[in-house]
Image 1: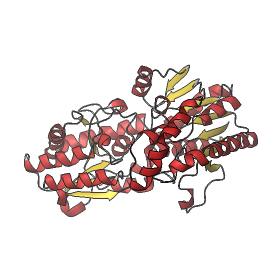
Image 2 (image 1 turned 60 degrees about the vertical axis):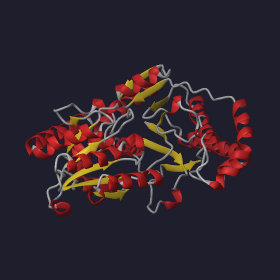
Image 3 (image 1 turned 180 degrees about the vertical axis):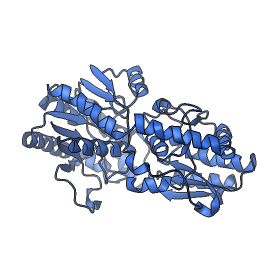
Image 4 (image 1 turned 180 degrees about the horizontal axis):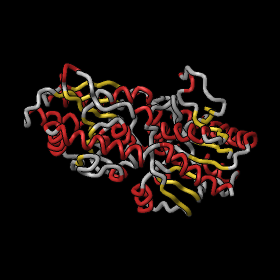
Length: 413
């Protein structure tokens, strides 16, 4: 098949788990003999210092630039022309590549006019991999004008232009996206979007996955890491809904209430600087700042080595996750997981079988469950081994590629 992939971000221009899914599935389809054209945004393309496949096209304009004081002005001066550029590029690529089917992946900060156009050009042959809530959310442009400015540089133009911008948006007709064929990464995601009024004509569940191969020679920490400390690991975006503050709070409980003084908590990820500063302050308040190590964000190819340092993985998400890629990474690396069964993550973790579950948002309970694994290496090993079985048998990307391939083939017939 000739397959058009449409996504907002594509590695290495973005490090997010959802984007890495997209790349792994794309590579898998190419390996299976299909022709691909990946159409994505211009985001960070100037920073890419490697030679890319010719089928990757970084040509689309995002709705809004990141943290730019120009956004207010460009809404009136460049938005229409940027949208016209997108429409032209899509028409051109479809005419040149002649795709048999399209798969639309990430859409955050892209205009809804893009999938609407692709549906019109390829009727009945467009599928969506729905890993987030974008069909039920306002556009990034609407969000931009509604939220307070982040800096003084944007406050004045935003204040002066807000009413005119909102009047302009109110007059615009929203594009009609049909969503005839939708793939969900979890049953939870399908059911939750259905509750929000999103009901595609045809849907299927294809569980998310990872390429487990880089992790299979990893068995948790086998060396004397960090002065012999038992290592706890958090990987994810640093914001409140992902719950890294719970990991720090739990570490405080483990030290003060349980008397474990030889622990380290490794935090990997990036987010709002203000929130990261709150995390550092919390570590000081809990008297564990010397035991918390902030590693920043790491590219995907560095993650297997990172997991090699860990003994216990903490999945602390508070919000209902569509999936939970980092859980699979930890399991594939044969690391015991303590997690909150929120959203789609509940379809990965089974309490006392391949993980220990704690009450979402409850740092004390997280500490209690983590303490069980600290004092019981046998349980830790048991959960780690069963976790690897779960990752390999249910959540390997090869299975995901085959199932998506079969779904798309049905649309081509």
